[in-house]
Image 1: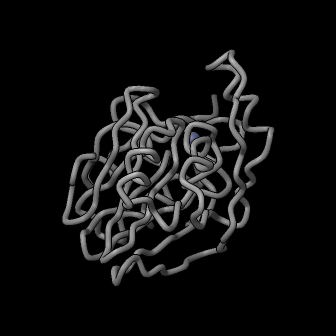
Image 2: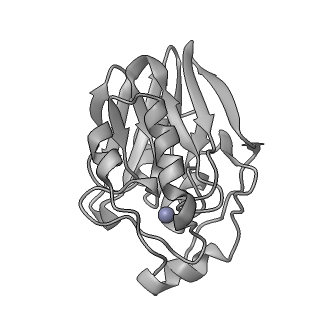
Length: 207
Ligand SMILES: [Zn+2]
């Protein structure tokens, strides 16, 4: 865990260069994406620091497969976020061995914006329209100036647009992210970046 702002952490993974987020309030915490590796859950939950909520930025397998390891907790996502067997097809392109766990669907959903209280700390979830997926969630921690952008932003590699992406709306969504005046933007893959990086980012075409 790397602390990037007061009580705001990232967890970097070598695997796919994945970046998860962890926001800590008074006696409560929230995880941004569960990732693929259950070891973070053992670390946090065994020391009583397991999150009461996970927010899924979108339903791509690398962001959601480890949710089961953190239960019991609320699982937040956009209302169009579907977590089912179909996402294992894309996993199979990277990992031939079968997925052994249980897929956990969101328990709490929202459409445009919802504000959560994480131990006295405000955390806003936003959906600014389709871009990397149909249902991207942006997690904003206003008191820290931190935005978790999911795969709307990638550092160290170009952003990816699959068949579920909407590149024509991507710049609009990033502009809405920039309106939040973030000091730090955490990508779904790679190291944290600043607003200038987001402003200059190249929008991918559907691959
Ligand atoms: Zn993705």
